[in-house]
Length: 74
Image (tube, one colour):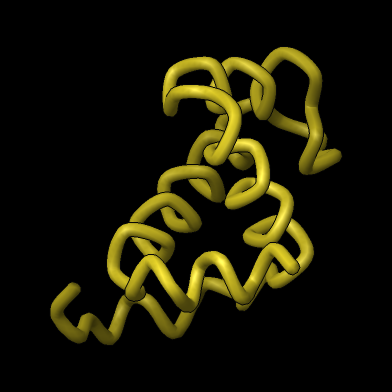
């Protein structure tokens, strides 16, 4: 992932990132996204906000090494 000044506007969302990483170990991306939106696991007031946060978290998880993702979910 290349540096983008726009990324500083997004919070770390550590708890949400950890939960998403755990879910991605068991389910595919589409199923996890469905959980985020339908079950509101991030507890956002709008679907648009949850969808944006999921996209950001997914990009971050894709950018870090797999061993770091595994350490994150321990």
